[in-house]
Structure formats: structure tokens, C-alpha cells
Amino acid sequence: MAFYKYGQYLSLSSDAKFDVIWEPGAAPSYSGLYRCTGCEREVVGEASRKLPPQNHHQHTPSEGPIRWKLLVW
Image 1 (cartoon, rainbow, N blue to C red):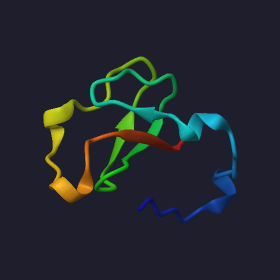
Image 2: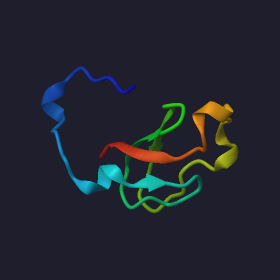
Image 3: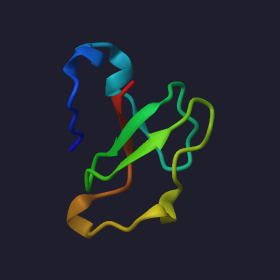
């Protein structure tokens, strides 16, 4: 879970870019904080640079496949 101290630097958004699921090793369109949909691990992703690959971390079977979702843009 991402935490923040200074709320005045963040704005709520319902933009569809937050709903896109990215595969491991994909190059996202937006820089930001990405969260794994299975285990909730977070990474920094840069636009047009690859997200961590499949072997970045391992999941248990109950966590499902590694997939990344934009959390903070």
C-alpha cells in the first residue's frame, strides 16, 4: 500500500489509464508507481522503459500471475 504525507501534492483521478493491466517486461505509456495485482508489491515505472520481468519476484499459486497496474501517475 502506498502512503503519503502531503495530500496537497496528489489529486484524485478516475482516468482509464489506472485500469490498464501491464504484463511483466512491458513498457508502460506513463511514468509512475505500479503495483503488482497479485502480491501488491510496488515498483517505479518510467514511460517507455520496461517494467520488471516475470522473474523479478515470485508468487504463490494463490496470488496468480505477476501483472502491474498504475497506482500513482
